[in-house]
Amino acid sequence: MRRPGLWASLAAAVVVAGVGVAGGLPGPASALAKAQPARKAKKSADKGPRKVWQTYRVGKGETLGELASLLGVSAADLKKWNRLRSDRLRPGTRLKFYAPRIEPQSVGRPSNGRLVGGVSVDPDGDNRGVGWVIAARREATWATPETVRYVRRCVSHYRHNYGRSKADPIAIGDLSRRQGGPLPPHKSHESGRDVDIGFILKKRAKNADDGPLRNATPATLDVAKQWFLLKCFLDNPETQMVFMEHSIVSALKEYVQKIYKKRKPLLRKYLRFFPGGGAAVIKADGEHTSHMHVRFRCPKGDRECIP
Ligand SMILES: [Zn+2]
Image (cartoon, rainbow, N blue to C red):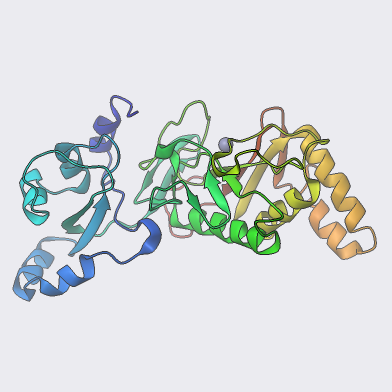
């Protein structure tokens, strides 16, 4: 699955790592940090950025040598800290390591960028969570912590309103690779700010638990549910763009005009987001027939992020 040259490009990057912040759960790192003699920690602090104990969840196909250079530690230390008898790594294993903390960052453009210290929308790797399923490639569940938070928020908002008996789980498509970069066939999805979310159809999926992204037309789209989900993203000022196919955009606009007919302030507020409006977040195109593609703004403080 890995592209050749991925690690070469990583070596050129300043520091790139998927730190053990996946899921945001405190790993054994804090306990280890306490166990670390104070003298040793102080000594390393004199030499540069303060080192802390962290964890890294091993991805498929990753090797000890590659990870050592990725995390900025030696392979020997990595083996010692984790009491590894061989160089073989099992995917999913949490490796402890002691290195300067890596701040999550979106770097560059969505069409030419990378992701540093990204988090996975599916940290336990089981392809599902409350109200959603992963309908995409396993290596592309990564994004900035902000992106993951925004997606989770809207999906759980949706599930709260439409329970299991009323709606399929939301199908989450590609986000970014763990270290970002090209993700064919997408032209973007490189810097952890993009996510594809499957359209919600009137006809429920036969097997919603691994439902792929399904093509929708204005006739097959569940416009009410789709609007509910879309509205959540539009209400988030950090949403920069939402790409959808022309006819789907028209169907949603018609729906908005209908439901807010007697509530002019809301009508004005939401029409602004449509193409031609004052804050045209929604972009209509010919490609997004099976999903809406949501892009978020550069996270605050990510200085190398290009809008
Ligand atoms: Zn996309």
